[in-house]
Image (cartoon, rainbow, N blue to C red; front, side, top):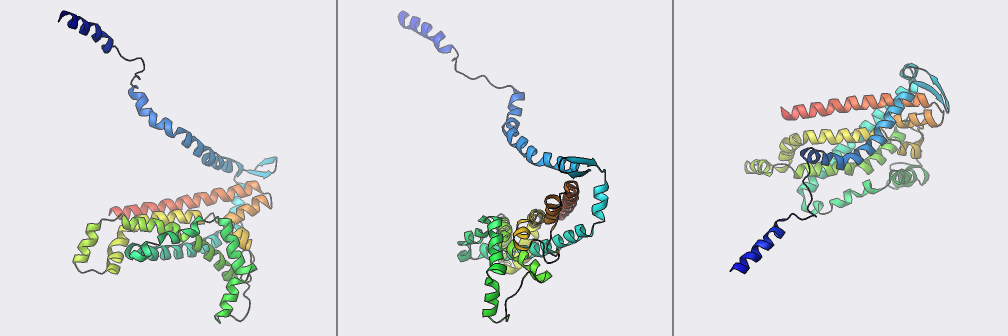
Length: 313
């Protein structure tokens, strides 16, 4: 007994010693700052590629820039651009093409989401609707340029079914040229809204839908009177995001129309590109981009605020 007790006493201090490899606990300040340290590299990267170009564009818009020669102009570029008929024409073209395209995308995406959410057969093939969004915008623009203009695919199809009697020059008419841009944009980016609308339908409270069914409501009535009002904030945010992207429409215009006929399809992005990289008015182009950014932020902020205010009420 004495020997066993002595051995226990001899072992006890050895087991009570803390291991040298044990990590010390972080201080409360370090624990609270650790998540911010993890995301700091990504935040710094995003600031570098977004905030700096914006500040540089604002600074450059205050000068008349001709390559390395910078001449102070103050607000002269903004005064000139507000009196520029081409600027307002490009803004109007952006509103027309973007508005019609966005309206069609919203209606088609809601219809597809309605059937994909309700019909099991269509629900199983929903991945097919997402395929156009996976193509590069330049590839889509070349494809539709081939279909409308170079390859005359659409013209031959219309002649085959008897709607036209000859080749259609899509760039000879203002509205036909705009139609080519709208079709290309709707074909590629309707899946973006479709994904969001289907997710919004699937995220709704199923008990409300079941209660409406027990009351004898049909599925179209449920969708129109219950689902759509509940989806209103989601729809507004999705449409706003897509609208912001439409204001930067450049690839389709550059590849398919080059702004023709007579500038009828020149959007704001193409106007800024033409001023900066064809006419080398870099300060003037920067002023146009700053004005476009300010208008986009103002409209988007107003729409989102109203949507969420109405959703709370």
